[in-house]
Length: 298
Ligand code: GUN
Image (cartoon, rainbow, N blue to C red; front, side, top):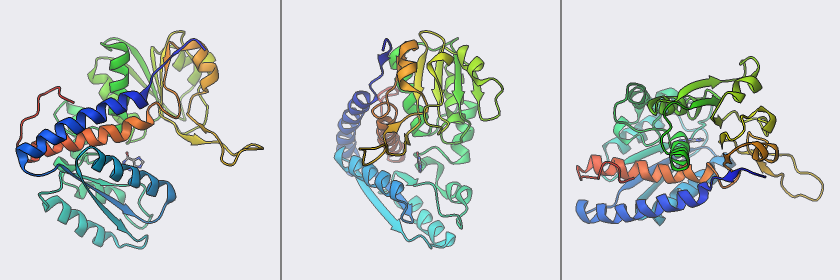
């Protein structure tokens, strides 16, 4: 392996420590803790794990966590009433509704009901629009975490060729917007892209967010490229394994031979998502309580 490892776990730990420091100062100035409400509908095991980690991380960095667990058959109206209550609650700075929601609930309607200034996930169309037009707003946590890792590694990104593989609202599209704002030349590739390996070979930076285990091969990469792997896929267990291995969307072994730097899975992008969520919540708290926060503090 010749690529440098991009240590998202260490970067996220540093960011969380910084958030904890500012959270303590915030509490002194505002006379209350910054607060994050997390809403989970149903009993999807993966979502339960995510929600538990988000709650734990929130209290660990000195903020107040409010968990709302609702049964799978919760009516949409009941969820909308809860969101209205959280919007009006001055102790709540950030609201996160864990996705996916059960199929009888309209996800877009629920996200639209969240006060854009408490939408720490950055999924509300107001924040999507703010990002697209260059206004201040909340940016989705995973792509913002990827951008932080890229800037830490490469410094100025302007003029670089980037290929983002995947066009989801949560990662692909906001990632492309963020990189455009950094003056990159951005291509968004997806399942219908013709000759994906040839498109990827032009890129100085590759962000893989497709949800296909080990799809991007080392032979697709420009030598020295920086590779950000957003995928978290569990392979079926092979003999002797209890659970299958976790792998990304990039074939790590071959990519690490060609790339200049690469995020591992696990320990790359994954830990950044919660760290940025805490960061967004603290930014929301300062805005909501009208307490100043230095522009580039976090
Ligand atoms: N489900 C998977 N990723 C996310 C995320 O970043 N935010 C929310 N709310 N749900 C998710």
